[in-house]
Length: 285
Image 1: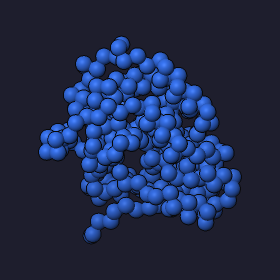
Image 2: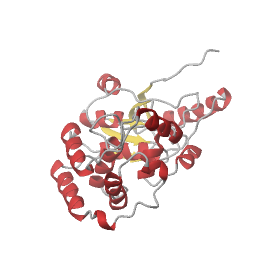
Image 3: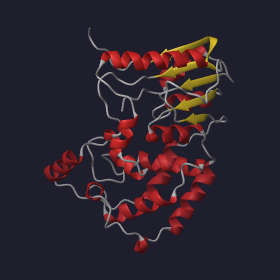
Image 4: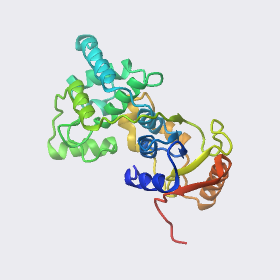
């Protein structure tokens, strides 16, 4: 949700920074700014309290060698034994989206991938989330109208209305295809944190040359709710995620939140640094 294209950070990184300088995205989202900055030979720092955004940024900030990724996928494929995977206790909301054949693979990968500690597993996990659900044969789910998660009731009615059936998709095959499509390895690696943007204690004073970010919307967008299927794979509850993320339709609360964030931006920026804020929506006053 609310993502901007790579051309946006690419333009500002090129205009306002030099190779080797530090680029920070305090609301890093899917990691677009961080990936562009490491591809352009900048030192990058990403930050996001959303665990899904943190993972996606982590995967793009430290891209492993392709051979290591393929070796790990092969090892997981060999270890996978559908006969010992129990999916009977999985949530019905999940079981209506994936065939038993595919869901067993997802449950196995969910338990096996240690994305918090391994950059290889983080990259594979990010790829799994990328192919989790959509409307083509490149996705693991039955045909879905969007790549963000619609409500379970909407999905249930969509399935019934369109007489959909859950396809048997092989996660290991689709992961290899995804890797061939998306793989690109920068020479640099970045850093990623999951801190409150109003107090990024792991980012030093006057250490950043350029900030590029897109702040939260003033309208209520529940990022956890819109990604409840992917959060299931990360063992996270969407309601708990949304409780930890700032959102408010109250302008005074939004002003206070952004004022504190901007003060923190000023603290970490060098005296001659620049900050670019991509504003997603504007309320009439």
